[in-house]
Image (cartoon, rainbow, N blue to C red; front, side, top):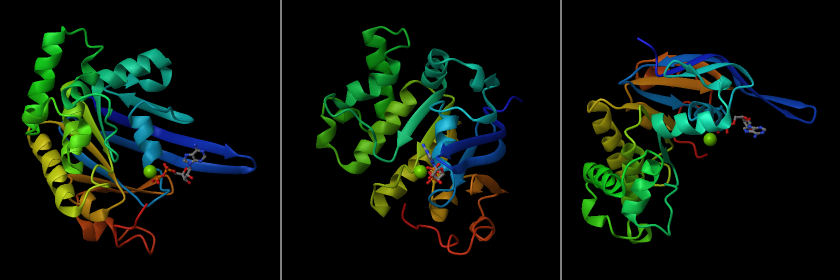
Length: 247
Ligand SMILES: Nc1ncnc2c1ncn2[C@@H]1O[C@H](COP(=O)(O)OP(=O)(O)O)[C@@H](O)[C@H]1O
Ligand SMILES: [Mg+2]
């Protein structure tokens, strides 16, 4: 089986004057269809850099990234934008909803370039809103919703294009713990329904909810295995074993 995500010895190196930062320092990993993987690490460990590469928002300095078997490093900007639109659904910490658009219009965004009629777009977006239980808010403005509801809209938007992978970057970071739990429960449900999920977090207790944990530190993988917090937290630097440090 072809992995959906494959990193082959990926590096991301930033040159800051005399200073060289190896944000990603030789990561190899594979994620297969149907997996629910958490990438966990403390602030500065390379999570966002990793997310940007997985999401085709950035390319490796060295090494290869294959998305569904295709070498992203060889694609031009247009091809990257197209594969990003088709294969990936994004969920961000700050929801990234467009406040000038209503809920339904936000969820329709990933469908704009999918060659669907207006009616089909609306039907797909409504179906997606139904999945997160917000169909009755379709005509509301996003500012009229609570934080948890806004995050559910962003989940509906991520789902609308029927992506191969859902990429969630600190999706509970801006929410209170109860609402954060609901959002996490939702990701688990999507996983049970067959979706592939990559969750990026600094929080060990959140990572432990996934099916598999990849721990990164200083741009390298230091753990890749079962979501047993006593195991994956133990491999980290002293001071990083508690989880939940703020970013
Ligand atoms: N554009 C950039 N230029 C220079 N250094 C960067 C840049 N982006 C990230 N870094 C550095 O790379 C390392 C990893 O950063 P990042 O991926 O944002 O970590 P995390 O998301 O885990 O906090 C950090 O040391 C950070 O300062
Ligand atoms: Mg980050």
